[in-house]
Image (tube, each protein chain N blue to C red):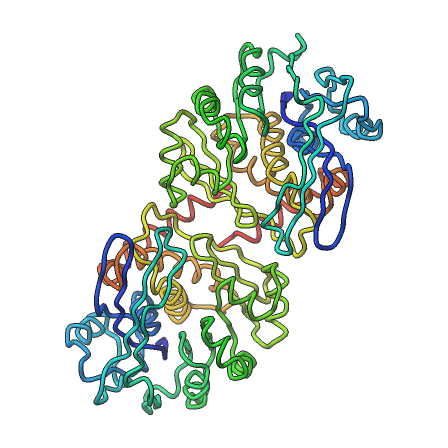
Length: 299
Length: 299
């Protein structure tokens, strides 16, 4: 089955203590879509400007991502530039140029409206609502978010959380949303806001799922070197949704393994700038790391 | 088989945002010994002053801890007082009164010199050396440490690391010791300093083992409420060593499961002040949480 993914489609200029990479393909939807494409067909909803390099359109196509829902509008592509500190855990935004994103009004092509697996990747909650409004009968809807929306669009976000099956956020965002330091207490509060599935991302410490079948502690794949963590969270949730859309059986049966596949896909993302390493990997590389994770967690 | 444990035996005055508890039984050896006692007989090496409450000696005895190696000297018991911030991850020392610890010269009773499992719990590296010098033929020696010794006794500590089988430290100490931000790169560097087994503690994020059989990612038991994390790391390594000393088969066969038992014992420690909750638990409570962890990590 396909995964419908809406989110940002951007050009990212990323600076780390060791290198500088201008105008890479980035954005939550790009990372999530490429990650999901290893497992399922993907329908991408996004917007880019006329400056968007053809090579990036070709890259989407190489991953067989359906671009019917990608608008190309007069103006500039959304551009984010940021800088990482030495330990890669802290980053600061240097500039954000919204470009064509300022007036983005995502419209679902008729062929996409019946999507069963819907990933509302990180983007303004109003746009997440707007895409969800256009779906007719989704089976499993997951939304991701970021601190920005907790700061400037909290009301929209809280309304969105009521409408979705799964909510994905990182530990500091969970703390910001619930005022709870303890991750498991925060999860309880988030369940009360709506979603049956709550996933807390903890970066290199892995992630935690709370679902009707209880808690799952999901490890991160151990990396000796992190080149650029931008998009790792998007790759995680994209990989997870791609795996779920392809898997037979219930969400509850598959979601733990889906998170493992998401974590492994995210590990490749961290090993290169932007999507450089993710796009070089293969399903068989992913399977090897999943097997490794099975060994690394056995007791 | 018995575990020989040397470390601090102290009175801890612990303040959290919610409560204040003066002169609780504490110290690395106390926490580690009680934790190990759920699995194996324990021989404790330590020193207390004449002010040491009889009820705490009784508590050791209740856990069948061999006190032949516990010196009771004229003077005051080592006293630590500290305060936790709201999120329980940051603490600051308010006062340290060494008391009888100032002149502590641990002497191994003859009956203890042949110990096979030796835990050099957190204490000055010179004292860890001194105890190790008196053992005749240990099978598995593990040392724990803290940032203080990295700051004031680094040379002693580096010499100690060469002599031991397993080294346990937390992630910030690993960073301090190796100047490496990445935990897995830090581990590689620590192996080069001597120990075959390196364990990095990451608090509520679990721990990581690197051994001749590769990496093991060990989860923490999920807690909804942390009352007082003092001694959790000592309980972890104590529980691990107790389990190892009791288990049949090689260290490599047993160490992953031993860490799980250590993590679970540490979870009880966090649920009460000082040793309050650890001493109330039972082997059967521990087994239940181990079973739970098996479920929580399955995929």
